[in-house]
Length: 211
Ligand SMILES: NC(=O)c1ccc[n+]([C@@H]2O[C@H](COP(=O)([O-])OP(=O)(O)OC[C@H]3O[C@@H](n4cnc5c(N)ncnc54)[C@H](O)[C@@H]3O)[C@@H](O)[C@H]2O)c1
Picture (spheres, rainbow, N blue to C red):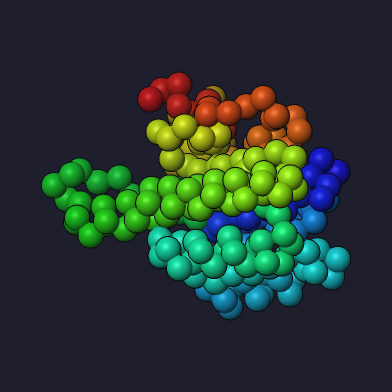
């Protein structure tokens, strides 16, 4: 139980990599997991499907992470409920088929920027404020760990690729599974990754060696 007593936030936690991460955190003994996603219905269904001992350790917050009110809500509700925050996984994101620039509507670029970059940065900033708060009270043994599909900012990251496309180029010649990305997040979030900081861990079946 490597996350015994930890309090975690997972954005985009209703499906895919985020949902696998939520399940892994609960299995590793997290005391509480706040799941953030767009729709209350999906969150309610997810929670109802969990075993009772897991469901009582879950807090669901519905909202759009690109809106600051949502970021404020998921951090403050986490602190109100559990009084600490140890791990933040920024997994909410949107993907887009790669098109030539001249075929790409600028509204698509706005959406990707808002969700994949701005919301991620806003979440990290808000959590850092929370970390300072925790440190003042002496409750946090370690700072939050961040995860994002973005590669450029100095934060511990997992970079998943070759999950849905390009499998023919990957060394392993198969799609990755959300559980395999969640396992890498678990490594960074848990004690085994205690000396990892400001790095990107590629979990891509060897695909990126061709990039
Ligand atoms: N799957 C891949 O091959 C792959 C590869 C590289 C990067 N990524 C990135 O990893 C992340 C997770 O991927 P996934 O495959 O689990 O995707 P997914 O679509 O299965 O899950 C994403 C979750 O984020 C939620 N979400 C989207 N926009 C949101 C918003 N504005 N506010 C709140 N919640 C929102 C969705 O409702 C969904 O539950 C995404 O950022 C994705 O772009 C995925």
